[in-house]
Structure formats: structure tokens, C-alpha cells
Image 1 (cartoon, helix red, strand yellow):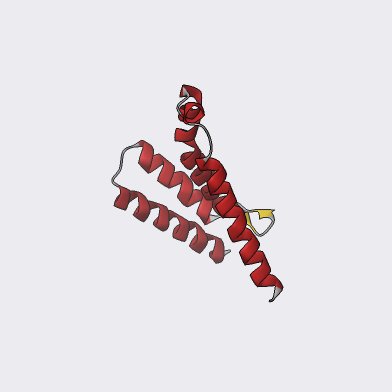
Image 2 (image 1 turned 120 degrees about the horizontal axis):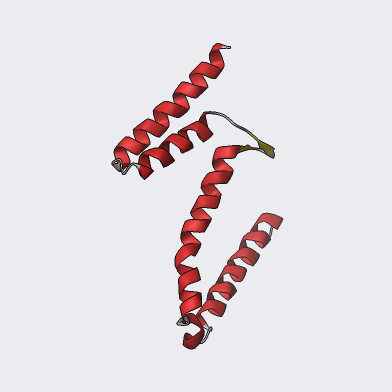
Length: 105
């Protein structure tokens, strides 16, 4: 068995054990108001971290380019309650425009 398959099997076993540990937590702990409040924000925090890393890094370097400009325009459009399709179009056009302007120099 190759090292890749060993890593896949170990990762699968680890995920299963983590899921089992989560199911083994007593209900009283999960129903605690503080825990419930924190758990409500975890998906949004993880998504925000993923978006920030993808928008501001390239490899191991920080990069300020069209992706970051598109993200800023999308955030502004969302704050102004624009429809989601409009947010996507504005972000894409902004990113493409900044990339195009950068290629002119």
C-alpha cells in the first residue's frame, strides 16, 4: 500500500473519530446558551477566513490585486442590499477591470 493510501485511511479514521467524539458530547453541554451562540457563528467565521485567504494571498505571499478590489466592491454592494446576481457581476467586472488596468502598464 502506498503512502498516499495510508494518509487517506488515517485521515478518514481521524474524521470518523472526530465525528464520533462530537456525537458523544452530553446534550446539556450543547444546549448551553453560550455554546449555542458560538456554534451559530462558526460557519460564517470559517467562510470569511477562507475568502480572506483566497482574496489576499498567492502562494505564501500577500497580494493586493483585482481579487481584493472585487471583494471590496462585493462587500459594498451587499451592504447596499443589491441582489446577489448584481453583487457577482460587480465583483467580477471590478476584478477583471483592475487586472486589465494592471496589464496595461
